[in-house]
Amino acid sequence: MSTKIGIIGAGGMANFHIPGFRSAGATVAAIADPNLKAAKAAAEKHQIEKVYDDPAKLLKEAGVDAVSVITPNKFHKPLVIQALQAGRHVFCEKPPALNAAEMAAMQAQAEKSGKTLMFNFNNRARPESFAMMEYIRQGAAGRINSAQALWIRRTGIPGFGGWFTNKELSGGGPVIDLLHMIDLALHFMQFPKPRCVLAQTFNDFISDKTFKGPWGIPDAANGVTNVETACHGFIRFETGQVLFIRNSWAEMNKREEVSVTFQGTKAGGMVQRLFGRDGLDDTAIDTCELYVQENGRPVNRQIVVEEDKSMGRLRSAANFVLALEGREPPLNHPGEALVLMQIIDALYASASSGAPVTLP
Image (cartoon, rainbow, N blue to C red; front, side, top):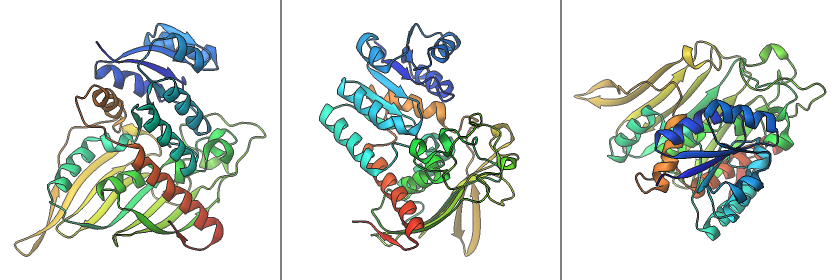
C-alpha cells in the first residue's frame, strides 16, 4: 500500500513536491490552503481528490500518512509541529524555520512523536551532488579542509514588499532564502561542529526595482523591505575546517552562480550551476569536477552525470517517500537542519554586532 500524502500550501513548489512524491509511488490524496481558490486550482491541475481551506481539517479528515509543508517561512514551525502532534510524518520546504530555536522545537517534537521530519534540501539530490558524495565517502578527497559556498545573483530580488522581503515572515533575505549551498558544503564536509562565525550583510538595492528577479511573488504596495540583499561570511569549525559563504539576491556579479568548491588533502572538487540569466533554469550550465595531482601533474576530472533541470527538487521529494518506506536512507536529518540554522543565526548576529560570534 502506497504512502498517502497531503499538501499544505498551494504555492509553486507544489509543482515539484507532487510529481516527486508520485514518482516514488506515493498517493497525493489532499491539499489545503487558506486561499481555497488556489487550493482548488492546484487540485484540478494535479488531479487531487480532497481540498481543504484549513490544514487542521486535512489532518483530521484526509487519512494521510504524511504531509508536505509549502508555506511562507513563518508558518513552517507551527504547521510542522501541528502535523507531528497529529501523528504524521513531515516533509517541509526550506528554510527549516525562522531560527535555530524554532528548529530545536521542531526536532524535539519529531523525537517525541516518533515521526520522520525531513526538509527539502534539494541540492543534495542533484545528480552532481550524489556523484560527488560517492567520491567523498570513498575517501577520494581525503579530509576537506576548506570550502566555498556561493549562491549569488545580480538581479534576483523575489518581489518587493511581499513576504520574502519582510523579516518577520521570512527570517531574512538571501542568507536564509538561498541557504542551499551552505547546506551542501556542510553535507560534503560531513557536518563538523561550528565554532566561530564572522559575517557582514549589505542591503544595497533593496528598494531598486531594476534588481527584481524573473520569478518570485508580485510586489506589495506599501509592503515591508527590511532584509539584506547580500552577505559574505566565514565559519571556522572545531575541527579546524573552514567555510566561506557568499549569498546575494542583488550584487554586481556577472551572472547567477550556484556552487560549492572544496579543497581536500587528496583532491579538490566543484559542483556548479551557472545561469545565462538570473533564475532561469533553461539557461543554466551544470559542472561537476574533481581536481587531483597525478604523476606530478595537475589533472582535472569531469564527472559526467545525467541532466536534471529541476535541480534535485523531484528527486528530493521522492527520497522522502523512499525513506519512509525503508527503501532508501534519508537525505537529511533534523540534527543537521539545527546546525544549519545555528550557523545562519550566527551569520546574522555577527553582521548586526560587527564582531565574530562564538557558538557554544
